[in-house]
Image (cartoon, rainbow, N blue to C red; front, side, top):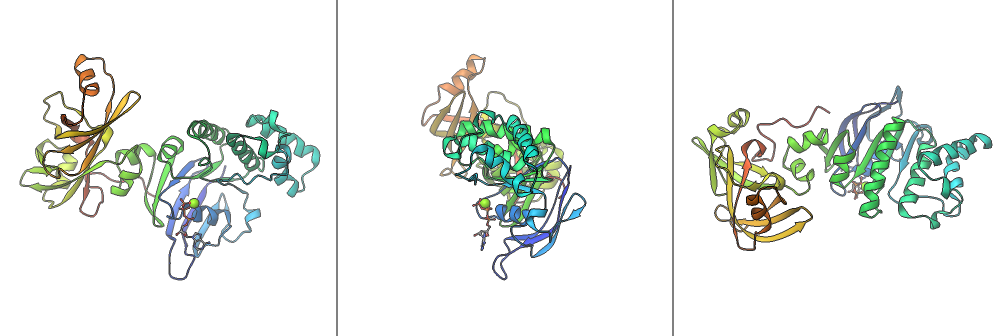
Length: 382
Ligand SMILES: Nc1ncnc2c1ncn2[C@@H]1O[C@H](COP(=O)(O)OP(=O)(O)OP(=O)(O)O)[C@@H](O)[C@H]1O
Ligand SMILES: [Mg+2]
């Protein structure tokens, strides 16, 4: 079991340009950290620094008790799995799995034993004598994982390992990776673009943007309390609807409607008081058709522009009647409910219908003019 500590790690490829600004992160022993962020934000670079495939410009990397900052990659006891499997096409599955151990000059009998053990763990027994060209994408991915775990590394680094797989296989292999990581108890840093992968796999998520950490925390916490607009938009099936708002006297006005400040949760009320400009984030899945007259609901009226029915729920795109009427907004409404009234509300909507939506005040995310969360605190400490 090995803890990974990054202290002020930084990197630039060209002089004067920072791909990673000084970066601190602790991955606890056995923890699965998922690193997410847009293309080019520095995710692969960070993995390469940890693996030793690139040199840091500054800072320190510790794995367990060892300072590995200047240690040769092959002595770091780190296994990296890439997006494109990188299997040897002319070798069988058995030989591919054995390869890292051969290089370590392990005895043949011992290698055979380990190959069988790993093949069992990954359900590859039947495939040992095939070559990579005779395997499906998911099977190749399992062999790549097998080749990583056979070395019994202190740390796994996975760089978008599932992006070549179709959706169903991705879900399946994702579950297998999680189970395997739990069973082995090996610390893992997992890079993905996919927010669903991030939410389902991670003990903690690290959101990166332009080489800078935006937020670190358990996925549920980032979802509930995003540190800024970027983090709010990144984690969630669809980004929130952002409404510009302002506080006047004792009301909060936004999207052409308003609520009394007194109705807001205490911590928000204090944080919002006296602010000229704010942004409110309304998650599509937190909106629902208003059927009750409760005070603590912010109401938004609009007309339906488009609907997409997805299994048991539906995405309703709508435009506001007031405020910024040109902006299309999204509500993700639950599908069939048991009451007659709600079956009507979700199934019988049509284009151009008028729609009254509500959101509980405690579900609204608030941000200041610079996009930083207010009334909440973002994530845990780095
Ligand atoms: N060897 C290199 N030389 C110069 N610039 C590089 C090199 N490798 C990466 N970069 C640049 O560094 C930045 C970060 O690249 P990196 O590969 O870490 O991004 P990423 O977050 O992994 O993106 P993606 O999601 O597309 O894989 C990019 O602007 C990229 O062009
Ligand atoms: Mg990358």
